[in-house]
Image 1 (cartoon, rainbow, N blue to C red):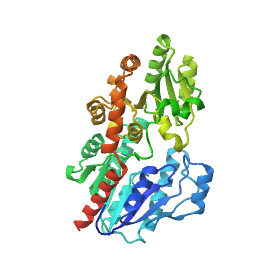
Image 2 (image 1 turned 135 degrees about the horizontal axis):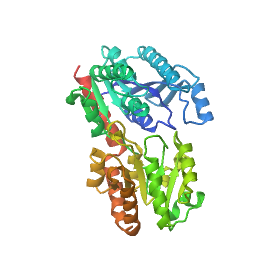
Image 3 (image 1 turned 90 degrees about the vertical axis):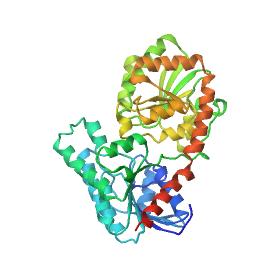
Length: 411
């Protein structure tokens, strides 16, 4: 990242290095060649009480020589329930706007959470060019979650706001070709939207051989068994019942094929009940592990599972994919077969895709690689190589720097 220093203002709902590592790393990397001021709220979800307290007591934090974080808004958390959370998001957006007006900027980076923070582009475009980073596509996630119709009045209202976000910001960046296509379907011009895949710190995440992987002793796992592993959020849109159907069928035939699920999330209790009801002995659940065990977690499985319900690749892409690849683990993907990510996984030889979300296909793939484990060695090498060549942190964050420089030079 070269050239003259810019003053970049970051507008983002929450920034805790313990939880929002991509955003934190982007701010630090941009700060190597620019002055970065991050204006954000007080983080409260999925962090420890001790961490939360630290941020409450340090509303202004100098995290690097040229990177300052200023926290504004409510100190009482994001609230429970959709309505309360939406009100809090609106108030937080207003607080961020008020603070951001006080800072001189050459370029403004706006994150997509909370929903419609991107509307601030309408206010700030008179001051400086804006780069809107669509990591989450809203209201698509709400429509999916609540099974709403496009004819719903609330959805129509939110769609209009979404179009305003895309039309008023100078440039849009999203994280996959599938998500770019979804944005284009809302009438955004193609030359305005760029794709920059999320990165992974390839120096921090590496393959951990099974003999050295401390999670095997921590979880009391047999190192000789064949593992399908999942680590991350146990959410609503991950085909869990299809996965448990497959586990149930495999258990009848094999006693050394195991599914290991590590994490927390909104579907965790339902999943535990389903495992108990099915009397599954081959599906084991463990709590989310400390960040320093991330390489061990993503090296645990012979196949690392990543799953999204039908049509979800159009609106989301898990950043854990990069972390799994950096750990040199083959992906077992359950996505739309015609999606860009499915084709990429197949074409690059970094994993395999379950056909049409079918239990039969999942069972067939697991059995095939159980009997042909040697074929996973090449996939493992390909996975690590892909991460090094396409997802390295500095390679990807420098693309943001170039884009920000590009939009300021056009003024």
